[in-house]
Length: 131
Image (spheres, rainbow, N blue to C red):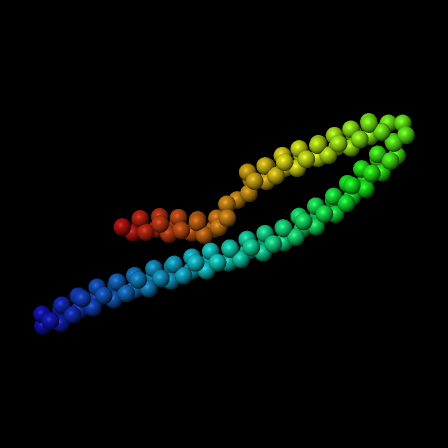
């Protein structure tokens, strides 16, 4: 009879450890799936953003080049230096505005994998409460 009680205790303990291990593996798996999903979303977003930025920059550069040539050619006879200075000042102002906007976007952008990190924090808090 003592053997059956010891078997039940060790079976109960091993079952509990097995269930705990299974739960931890399932929890870790779901968190890794979430991280993988967020990584894929970040990659797709970054690819689309890169294509749009490069296209916009290229088209914008062509437009600015021809607009600059037009302004300088229009004022070439009477105000050639003023036209060149004006075009240059225009580009400097645009560059400053772009840098300011980029800094603002960088400050406001949420960190990557924010949802995954939040879930890990919730998990850690739940494990601390269990102890």
